[in-house]
Image (cartoon, rainbow, N blue to C red; front, side, top):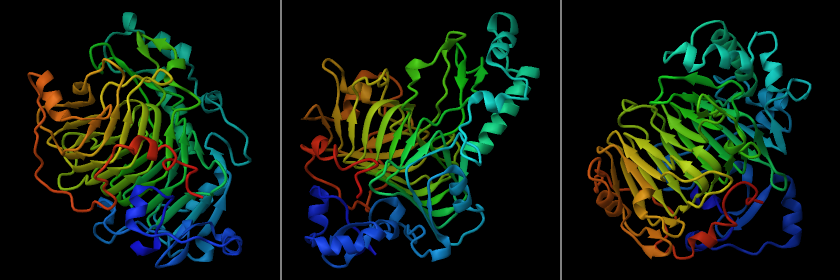
Length: 451
């Protein structure tokens, strides 16, 4: 099926296939099915039925990733409201192939009739209020122990109400695509891909996935932390997933706008795209990760499923990202041709880009970093002393740089291992030259660039 796939022109596409010029009449005839471009071998291909090309990262392994391409008319939907999306997704156990076209931005915090819901609506009737919660668990009077009591019970009850509204469970054999020409996606929602397989998500904006009721944990670290739930997209025990040309962002609610309680930032955001609980065979490509702190977690713990967590991450743009781009545990992760802009944006200052721990085997090659003047390449990586980062051809501010050597030279302990126990073979589109990658990916990544 690889020949039936094409994307906006860039160096990779030019090498992979030769495109044809489409006549105005042909375009007009194809508008109803969302045509992208024409492939020299296959002719017009519509966006909603495209499958992951052969050798395009780990998600091309096994049976490949085809999503809902075999959906019949009864399982093909166009949705623009939360209620319509819930109906289109159906039951998480229904494996019939389905295609869901999202038109415009769907507000997850809305009811069946489309009325916008607020945090106060979820808290109503539970007895929860932030002021009462802060009073009940102030460290000066409550101490350094896990919250317990009426206000914690009330917080949990309010959280259950929000969760019921904003979490969307995706069944196997599903393709979800944003309709070209509209800013399409989900505002304030959490897409859960759990214990299912063969899922495609493309051309979507996932914005401001916000927890109304973060929990205070005084035992988290030396000073305690506010911890929130809900990733914009969460893969848990998912297999063969392709996330392509999406945008992930906290906008319009940036972390810098949140208050500080008990000396810690009141954190309402969790992950952008987390891949955990033994998820496997995942390709993440041509997305934009913007304005977010804890961006991508691969592996939920140091004992997550061994032999799984195989993830390819290529041709993505990371800008205004605090950390976890990604944080990897256990698995075999291939990162290539990504762009990391570590300048501070909207208050999001970079702590590190890639963290390899719990014996993760990361191959990071031919990526590009833009770092502020005076910043050191050593700060681009992190680890616990057991993880590996192999790979060459990385550029920092246009200069070839051994980023692992730079990190190890600056750290007397917890050094990264420099070799991986596997060699990537599913490397479709790997570019040898990345000098122009920063410019090339500006207009070819993220939601809205597929048309």
